[in-house]
Amino acid sequence: MDVPRLAAPVTGAASRFFSGAGLLLRGLGLYVRSPGLMLLGIVPALISGVLLVAALAGLLYFVDDLAAWLTPFADDWSNSWRSLVRVLAGLAVVGLAGLLGVVTFTAVTLAIGDPFYEKISERVEERLGGTPGAVEVPFWASLRRSVVDSLRLVAISALIGVPLFAAGFIPVVGQTVVPVVGAMVGGWFLALELVGAPFYRRGMRLPDRRALLKADRPTTLGFGVAVFVCFLIPLGAVLVMPAAVAGATLLARRSLGQSTREG
Image 1 (cartoon, rainbow, N blue to C red):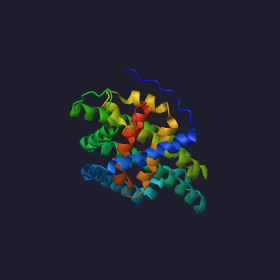
Image 2: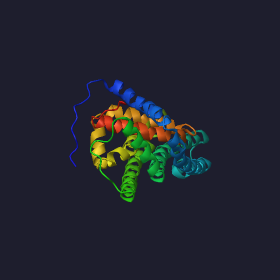
Image 3: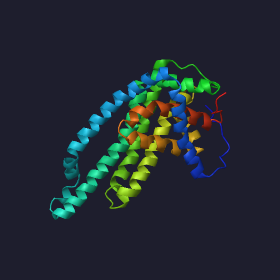
Image 4: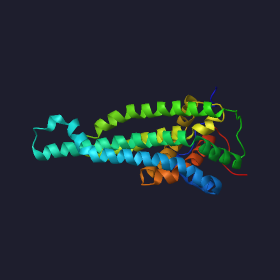
């Protein structure tokens, strides 16, 4: 399918970044005005959240053993240097797990709650004037495409996460620059996942939405990083997920040059 080419935004990158973050707040406002969907939107995220917390708890329990396993070369070092290297290794493991955990959580939650989040996205589009170019997509076909695309995004984020994991061993840089880069990478992939429903509704697949979101990368990153940070807060992923779906619908419409204003 031909992807529409939009004129490049004329505002500064910082302004567009914060504008993208604002889409999450607008998505929250749109979502809470549909109380009938609120509980249903939280249930799939709660299920995925329990699984994610259990996995992270297990990782934290064994993180010292993992750090030692990853740094056998430090066995004969002095206690202070060995401890420093293994603390850095542990932080790198937790950082990589956080990046992959957030992206995987989103993929699993969207798969479990596909009918609910599709309805939230549709409700948002109805408030904004409907869906131009909508196509009828059978439920199972939509779910299958969503799962396949999500698996691709998780795999790509894992490949990118490996060098970030390695950089996590670098003192100072690994604890300052790497987390920021990780948030940017995670935010980008979250945005790509979350806009799936409105793009599928228009008969557009992953390459289409990737091309359109790249056209205004600062806005996409602003939205994605805001969601990523919220997902790192305890219970944040569960409570914010439905609002993130609503905000992603706004992001998709904006990337397509369609109205994001009610009425």
